[in-house]
Image 1 (spheres, rainbow, N blue to C red):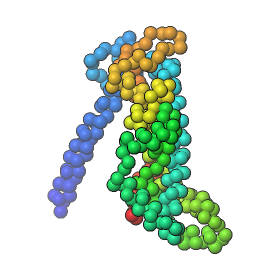
Image 2 (image 1 turned 135 degrees about the vertical axis):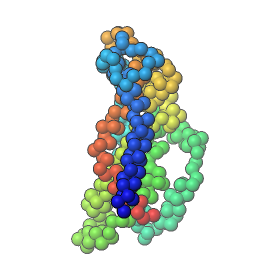
Image 3 (image 1 turned 90 degrees about the horizontal axis):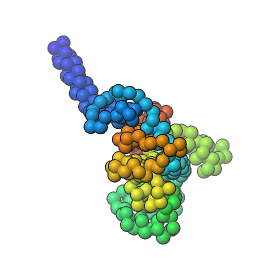
Image 4 (image 1 turned 180 degrees about the vertical axis):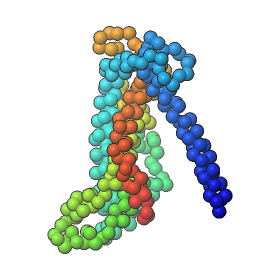
Length: 290
C-alpha cells in the first residue's frame, strides 16, 4: 500500500513538472513581448532574444499613446465593447428567459429556429449584404448589431434559468409580481454567476473583434485596436501610427509593435480577475440542463 501511494506521488510530481514546462512555453513569448516593449529605443538591439530589458523605458508607450491613430482606435474599441456588451446581455438574457416559458405561443417554432442556427448559418456574403443594405457599413453599429446574440449563448443561459426552482417564481406571482418584476427581482439577482461569465465572454468578443471590423470598417479613423495592431505587427507598417504631438522621432518599429500588443491586451487582463470567481461556476451551472 505504501509503495502504491509513493508511486502515485512520484507520478503526480512528474505530471506537475511536465505541465510546468508546457506552461513556460506559453509564458516566455509573453515575457519577450513585455521585455521589448519596455526596452529603451536607444538600447534596443534587433534580432536579440532577452527576457529582461537591458535598459528600461516607457518611451514606446508614451509615443503610441500620444498618436491620434491609437487614441481613435482605442475610443472605437471602448465604445463597441461597452455598448455591445450591454446590448448582448439585454438580448441574450431576455430571449433566454422567454425560451424557458413553454406555454407562450410559438414556443416550438422559436426553439427550432434557435437550434437550427447551431448547424446552419447565413455565411459571410449574405450577412455583408444585409449590413450594406441597412446602410451600416463604416459604422460601429455594423459590429454591434451583427453579433447581438447567438444560439449557443441563448441555450446556455436558458439552461441556467431552468435550473432555478420554479417555486420561487410562483411565490413571487402569488405576491403580485408580473413577468417583468419576476425577471428583474428574482431571476436576475440569482443569475449573477452566468451574467458575470457572459459579460466576460461578450467583452472579450467585442474587444478582440477583427474579422467583422476588417469587412465592415474601411474608414481608418474608425478602425478598432485589432486592425491597428494587425497593421503594425503583421503588415510591418508603422507609418499609420502617426506622429507624436511634440514632433519627436519615432522609436524602433519593433518596440512600438510590442507596446501596441501589450496595450491591446491590458484592459481585458485587468477585468478578468474581478469576474474570474464567477467564471467556472457560471459555465458549469449553465451546462447542467440542455
